[in-house]
Length: 396
Image (cartoon, rainbow, N blue to C red):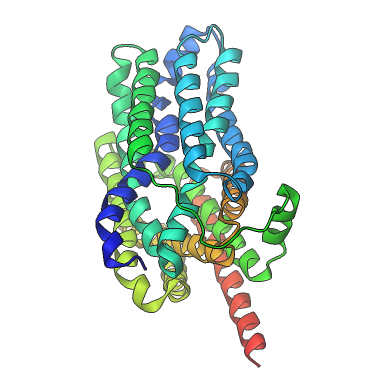
């Protein structure tokens, strides 16, 4: 836990770290309203334009794999500067793309280089907060969640001028963060001398840790549930239950509020009872909520029952995610960048399976969505039960 002398600086530093991480969700969500315009501008089909989102996620994951181990060896502040500089340049270059192929290639580069700035943030928080890393991560996540909430609306407003204006504003945002980081982001270094490891050795250390492996799988399963929600919830609310777009925005906002509330509760309690217990409470709540959601679909109950089940489910997923991530980082105090890269890549990779899985089991109802959510949280439960068994065996 940071001491009193660092409290004031942390109150400013945490929003700055959240703003750095927000670069990626803004880059993803702000341009979504412009997809039809982009297809028209480049004289191409919508599926090819939509692929630019998948390419961005792939580039981001690839960048994390490269820059994650570098964050354990080189200046984290330097990587933030590098990532933001590259992000600004590639974002501006996107406005000059002549065809969809150039646009997609630049989106890959934008995500790849931009990941250098974001991959170091969990490591900085881990060093500042130590055993209370989950509290710092919760604060940052709570602030950062404003980005995906407002990004589509900002993108829609900017689209009234042109699709290029979206990327101009995105570049200006990154430039402002660059300036703030240049003047206010400290170089957080470990007091211990780092042993020299190759990139391969760093990845071996992360993957060979049995306890962390279970938390990594838990994080992956939560990511699968999150991506299932993002993929399916417009269909569930708008098509299955036929709510209006206005009602959908309210329901979606309520779920985001549940996520933020869970993070706030976590900041209040985690320092007293620890990340492992908070994770356990999140698992219990998620099992209860996911089971209720599944039963609501089996029994064909009306919309209010689904809403009441989804709200605590989303909150519990965020509680599991932030505490699992904190526990992973605590296992690798000298390899937080590599651990973040592994965790992020696995989460994106598994999360990307949500769409295909839902497509395979599509039946026109919300049942596949509810089933995938239930399977995901039971996967977390199994991992945590195995973790408890291992802990008991070590105590004997």
